[in-house]
Image (cartoon, rainbow, N blue to C red):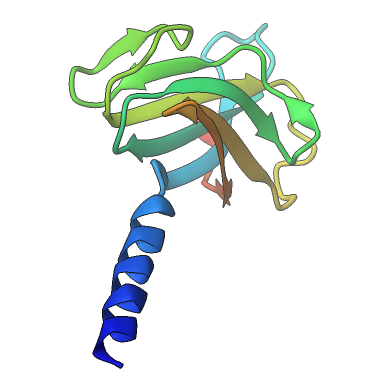
Length: 138
């Protein structure tokens, strides 16, 4: 009887350790940005802050599971520097940002999905995006 309890305990611990997530999305927000130049058009700016427990590489980023985001910027929050997403990234906190020209759907509920490659596995992490007040540089 005791032997089966120990086996169950060991099995449970190993199962929980295997299901540990690599990526945690801390915040995701969007806002309309009105540039300071009168001839420039407004855009929606997205910022996603996330943390990784292991080394990783960004496989792809999707908005609402349909729009693949091809151009985005990635910043290391510790060093405050821009980095290339094509390289293998060290564990830590990062901010991913991108722009969308269409400002009509600012009040729509949206979600961001980040696919990362870590330990030879692709992990998918999804989060809802919060709408912030517009930023006016004019």
